[in-house]
Amino acid sequence: MRKQLRMMIEERDSGVALILVIGIGALVGALLTTAIVIAVSSTRHARDDADWQGALAAAYAGVEEYQSRLAADPSYVLQGNSAAPFTAASTVVDDATNPAFGFAGSWATVPGSDGTASFRYEVDSSTYAMDGTLRLRSTGRVGTETRTIVTDLRQSDFLAYLYFTDYEIEDPAIYGRSSSCVKHAWAGRTSTCATAIAFSGGDEIRGQVHSNDTIYACQATFHGRVTTPYNPGSGPRYLRPSGCGSTPDFRVKDPARNNSPSLMGVLGMPETNSEIRTAALDGGCLYTGPTTITFNSGGTMTVRSPWTKQTRPGAANPTPSECGLPGTGTNRLGPGVTVPVPDRGAVYVQNVPASSSDPNGRLAGEADATNCRGADGRTTGNGLGYPANNETAPAAIDGVAAYGCRNGDIFVQGTLRGEVTLAAENYVYVVGNTRYADRDRDMLGLIGNNMVWVYNPVISSRTRPTSLTIDAAILSLRSFTVQNTVTENASGYSSPTLTVRGSIAQRFRGVVFRNPGSGYIKDYQYDPRLLHRSPPHFLNPVSIAYGVTTWIETPPAIDANGAFR
View 1 (tube, one colour):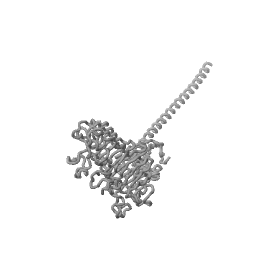
View 2 (cartoon, helix red, strand yellow):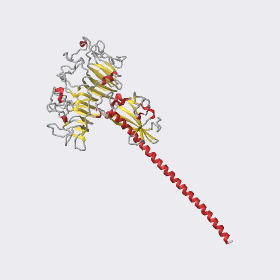
View 3 (spheres, one colour):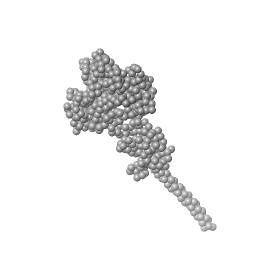
View 4 (tube, one colour):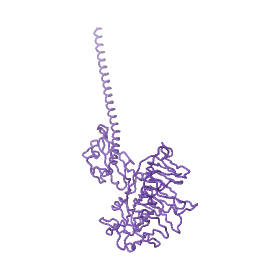
């Protein structure tokens, strides 16, 4: 009986053990399964996270690849995929050879990724002709992850600088010097050429400065970065003029050379502003001969232009009402016409064409109709009051007389409401305060094919010049300068201030101050909007590079299979 009972107990214990073993085994199996699931999930999560990060890097790679294409071929701004949604507002030439444009669902491979990373991009060039800005939407792909960024690409241009010069000397033509003087000092310009013009005491330069030449400075304060190609073996990258007792103050210093400009290469200037004429014929206004433009704060401008007959010659309507007809009527020297400021457009003032077959050309006997005389009846003048009574007109430069009767000159002043660029085939004269009605909204470009003058007439009864403000981006393919800075020396007289809020670019350095009473102390202030905006149709350097001004990540525009969302 005991034996039988013991056997029954043993059989029962063995059954419990078996159940226990099975239970433990099941638990271990569950734990293993959970561990495997967690490991696999973690691996997938890690891979997805890496793909997600990699997709953003691939999108950036797309931006850099597009920038490299623009650097190699500036005309590539015209290429794209006209069927891409982001390009719908632009006119482009389809380029199916570039896989990044996504023809037939193609993607471009990120170099060095072994095919695991790729990108596609779409370009919006709808505002490029007006402000030089391209918008690029770039989508990167790694695995099944895609990410999209939108960037604004802006040309590295004159507008990046408050003050830009090609040469730091006065225009050699003013002194009748040889063309051999048109050479940078660091490249061997001779001492017989015009003396370099220096930044002087009291000058406040509140923005970035670049000169392709060697900079001369004495006591001036530079609040922004200063750059130049001049690179001596040691010491600062500027020179002080003789007799200068103090050093200039460079607030942003090259860390390798104390109180010194930084090193940067040459930025080439265009030879002409004639492309602005093309823009003026396409939605803007073309005026002929001496032309006064006075901006009115309500968004209009009053134009006097006695030689002008057609403002868009060759167009279906060569005399559109939005430009007016300032050269018609019995009194062509009358009050002029008041018209709206061309919206995001251009105004170009051309010389009177020599050919009588040109719609704006000179006809027989027409000189008397425009009264080619000065205000005092002299035989030289333009009929618009320049020169003024008893004024000593500035000397001719390269044979081009100031206030020539048939010169394509602009005489501008007033309060601008709007965005416009004014360009002259000859001179631009700023004859009074030229300001914005709203400094956050309005924008003006002034481009002279020759000089851009600050009007400063010398007449027997005039009062001395008063302080002047110019809100504008200024580009002179000769010089930006003040008239008549050598005619007076008023001992003890405090010179007025010339305030420029915007930017100044010029081929030759123009004189603003020479003697007390005959010039201006400079107060130049950069308009920070010019880093990402420009006046309409503003000119660009000969060599162009594109930089990213803004970027933002947006929801993915394209799925991994290539379909737009």
